[in-house]
Image 1 (cartoon, rainbow, N blue to C red):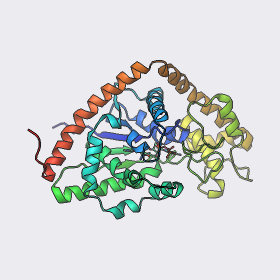
Image 2: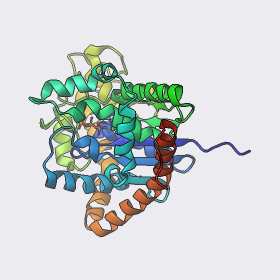
Image 3: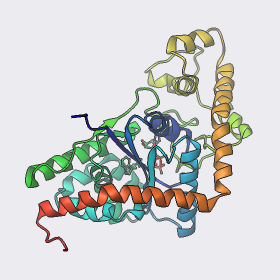
Length: 334
Ligand code: ATP
Ligand code: LTN
């Protein structure tokens, strides 16, 4: 018997223009895994509405995200790229999983606690967010979930939910594992190397957006926070997090080894480090920005790609949902 191909699933929110951390922490891995594995990449619009959204903005950002993912190298011929709300099974499966998930498991989630603390009024969906994420993953018999470090707790919760369901109703779900790269798992804000770079932080100089102009990128790196030292070395020392962050970005985009990078910067100052990192980022993002602009001229083509993706996703998710309902004792429609 030939072994079953590894299945990969990941999701990303249309909550704003992608930043360098999304690209280096997640998307680069998704692109690299194409071909040898079965890949599903989902634009998780149902997750985005767990904090209030302007309808016109959500609609625009959803298409922009699809264009940007393709421009980053997600190939719709090799990856099923789709929008979560196009596949009803996700929301339905979330409800079923809600009914095997203790409330206490959700109240413990760090992302919930941080996001809830920022809101005046917390929506029920924000608390339930990780159960919808579990539904996304489990519907596709996923083996691997490539994500950034911040998502590890959600994938562990997904495993707990799957194990609990299997314990109650019998083997139904594959238990997925998070895949987190060592370098790039947590790209930090340029203005504050103690905080994760995030697409929803609007401060100028915090994040590099994938569509930023070369001048904007140079501006942000020039002001990147470093430290009072002068050594250009990889380090775990929190006081040197700024320089380490710049070196990690350089490492991921140059493909060079750490010793080769340290040798390259030997005897150079922080100013040179910042400008070399800025230039390598500009060159890496140039084809992405150009590809994005081209694709945004062809909205009908984008919608066609997403419609094909949704058909392919439904073909996997719907039979799985039927199996789950059958296990739980629902009378299935004939
Ligand atoms: P938001 O600010 O809206 O929460 P985000 O920038 O954190 O958004 P997500 O859509 O939540 O991005 O994440 C998409 C993927 O990018 C996830 O796998 C996440 O772990 C990864 N990711 C996000 N920020 C970083 C970062 N700074 N470093 C590494 N990976 C990241
Ligand atoms: N919560 C994730 C997005 C997400 C996801 C998923 C990631 C939704 N569903 C399934 C991996 C697998 C985030 O905010 N980055």
